[in-house]
Image (spheres, rainbow, N blue to C red):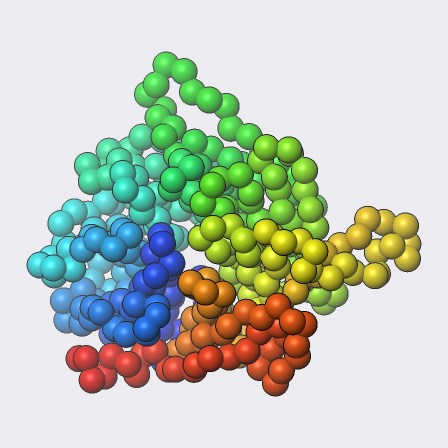
Length: 346
């Protein structure tokens, strides 16, 4: 998630179990625990520079970052592996072109470039595979670390995705061919894959529908986000795959129930012209319009929205069809400005 910074925030990213998030800023790096919302780490810019992208490796002391902003310490081709305990760089990986995003698993470092995804070993840093992608300025890529799968825009066709094995090694004598899926007619703008690796959510530049692809049955289900074109910022599955969330520049966060599909209302628009039904979200709430927002799920039907304007929203999902002033089938539990939480900590 990368748009114009507000409150000095350049990007926010969840860790792999959705319990922490990193905040890359002009003033360095901040890491927050989600619930309760507290700042757990702060590395000031004098040590690390201004940071454009940062991702934790689960709950360990190792994270990866790429410099950016007004006071970068490294160039934009360098991925730095940083030890939070010693506050030192333990390794640097230099690429041939600017790095758009990075992702970490237990044993892989995934680097997303403009038209390529590179798989490297972790912690060694050896290049295992270079996967060519469609022109990908938004660094669209999703990883299911337990299921050992990676998804990104395929160069085969506009609107298609490529599903690869996270263990792919170009030096191996035999390699499993990738799966290519025609998900949309327009270019892919956002993608997510559930923890089991059997369901992939995609959004195109049109942004009106979210498509769910079942890896096993090869079927695609259409989820209706809205009628107006929108820029999709985030798609995210809950950890158990029961829910899918979507945020966009319309300022509305939508939630679909995947475990109990009957909870989702069906759109009445398509049947009027003889086309298949489209499934509407069962819950929604509104945050700041045109501000990128990262969605996450917690325990006990909790849901969070982390926005680049510095706001943090916690919601409780409901099931009674209620409409409140803070949302449909949900209500807001708390609201904070997360960059301010670090002032006392600092």
